[in-house]
Length: 112
Image (cartoon, rainbow, N blue to C red):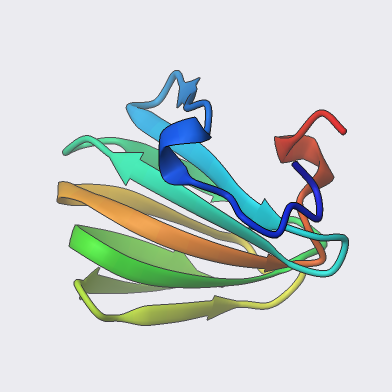
């Protein structure tokens, strides 16, 4: 799937995480990756950090995000920037979808 020019959502295998989150790894190359995450209300994206820059776009729902110790509630249309190494996480307040863009791609999300 790496470097596939066309990635159709219906063909992407969901990754069911044990925290009420379903991940869909969409188009990606070595430089950039797109990931869609579906959150159930109350699901938690535990605080973590990684050596990737990440932009999150809130497609739907409402979330409380913490980035580098600062908390804000975000909803549809909001975007967040998490530079490499910065600790971040979230709690889903209303069922929703987050679209993440990573650079470089998250090798730990795929089996290439």
